Amino acid sequence: MMEKPALTPPDVVPGVTNRYEDFVGAHVVQADDAHNTGAFYPYHRLLLHLYEQEIQNCGWPAGIPTGTGPSTTKPPTPSTAPRPRPRHRHRPQPHCVRRDFAPETFVQGTADELIGEGMDQPDFGSFASVTEGSFHSAGHWGIGGLYGDMSDKWTSPSDPLFYLHHANVDRAWWSWQSRDVDARSNDISGPLVPFDNENKVAGNLTLDHLMILGTSAETRVQVKVADLMSVGKGRLCYNYDKLY
Ligand SMILES: [Cu+2]
Image (cartoon, rainbow, N blue to C red; front, side):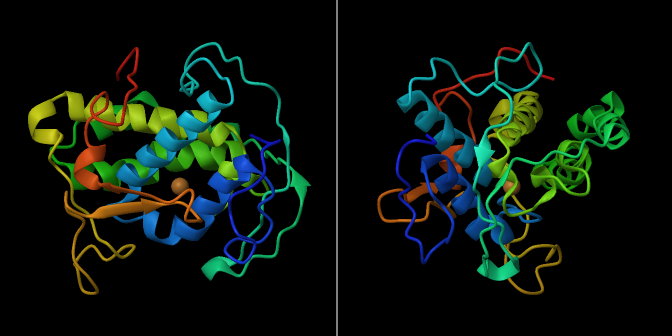
């Protein structure tokens, strides 16, 4: 992917130089809508699915590892990912992937009790609001610390560990859904605007909402939230060996 030319137009996300960074670019321009909203889980499920298809196009014979077993990933690859400013004022600053491990944050924030707390939530809204800020955040801060890429809300996918972490976060969502799969494959909620939990600005996400991902006509994909609810169904032809 690092050798394939980018499909992102430079005026959409300056600094994207290859196919790997197209995905960073997509996350950069959509991060404001895809975090602390109802879209968080379905957006990242779609992002992972598209990324997985692309690494398979490049010859990777398996799915994205979830980071819970022996890993075959290579050491950090140099990246020239864009470093954005909020609201898309990007000033690309080419640099190698940076990690600033914060082991205590990682260990405390991914403790079994926090996973269990997520799994115990009765509905999607509470599951999402509890877990986006607990084990999801801890994976980012635990690897990215103060100075690392994983701590950047916009460009965190410039660290390949993003995909291992998010595959595991998606596995957690599917683990929660699998506890009552019929009901929970239809349970979606959460604000369209970040932190608008009382819907003072806009409404809630629904199953009919269109999730749009991509930075160019060639890469743009539109998928209904309803089609992102079930792992192993429709376009989501993947599964997890083990669930929480
Ligand atoms: Cu994200």
